[in-house]
Image (tube, rainbow, N blue to C red; front, top):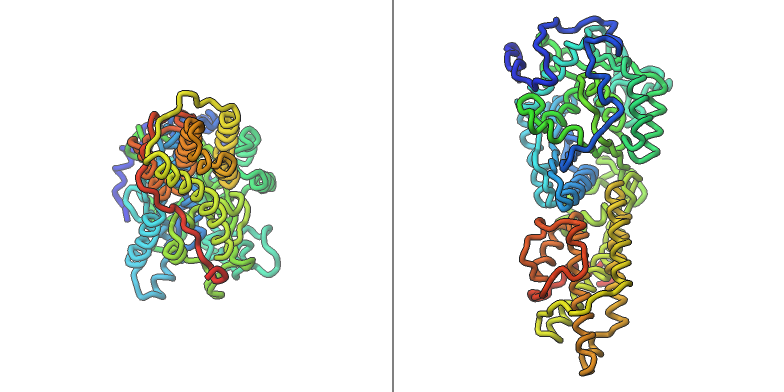
Length: 562
């Protein structure tokens, strides 16, 4: 932990750091928005601009008091798909994930395991890092809140808010949920005094605390939300957060007393930062808010946060308030997805029905697991997991439709043309061209709205068209007719071209299988080096010289098939 000497703060980001040596705390009444002490709040408040050519995507940082589950895998897979998609579009992408390693829950879990908190987090973090490897997650950075770079960033932002008069010291009295690390105001609780999120009993706390003057940002946040209807998605979550802000915002306690496992408050080591104040700032740590102006200016505010719906308020109310208070633009978008049940029942360790991603991947492979999560349910809604649903979905889409078309095509090329074919002289076909144009348009629209299931639905229109084309043209019949050889060439080339296009479309979703197919098609340029939509055109390849065909997705045999 860093405490005592704070001279390093002088090196903080020059735009967002002021050298004034104002006392910690400031006026408890807080400033008004007209106060020149904090002019940055007024600039670009209602504008969130995508930096030219840059895209910054984040997952929440995952709490390491337990091992990763399907919820962690779901969010991270979605972020990976977006990162891969925008890289294909030629964007400079920064994809950040990581772990949240502070807080009371960590201390409790470590004590129960007979470990120190540091020993516990060092042990558990490996489980997340290994899972992302076997899931083919292409993150650019992995942050841990116990890292020095993050601790310095938390203290720098606190210093920034303090100098703007937005932090004061007071006494907190209220209800606190230890498992959720969440404070709850009295007006949001019933007589049972249980956590609205997890249903567990709350603890009554009364202690000294530093407060962030969140209440000062009620009007600015409402104005910002009104001007940015896509800031929180899906729409139902946007309406939920608007209603919450309209109900009134209270100042937020941002420190705890007597909890040593956390980032110390500068100048007052008896306090450590509340775990949510600490955790949210990781998104700034990932762009070198303190040390390097270039990375921050390149990727902020072109940032999209993917979160579960249970932590949406922290990301869409507290976090934008903190940023605006510090003179920093809010992120571009916060997207809250739903939860997974298992065969209609809520997952819980006590019921023994928690889906273990390691086990699913070991049985069915990373691509099938990734595909099922993104195709089975509209992103943003709740989803239901069952092994049978995974088998049926993957057999129908990946084996019978996509894999079948590709494998039949490669086998026929080998049989009828010795494994290679040139682009036909006359290749124009209005029906195929119209289909591709429509698929591209709807695919891009869906991807930009994070509607992954709908994007895949469009892609499979091409695969279905390819399978129908095989049945309609019957290459095995054309091969027997001397006057149909040019038509056979066109049919086989069209099917190979369709396979190439499908590979580009599905690469963000099932990267391992897409890479394997790309090699089978004999493509010379790396898949990752291609660009969409530029390379999503018919007839781009002069000659196809595929390698030996291997089944991409052999059908999964369930108990009824055996």
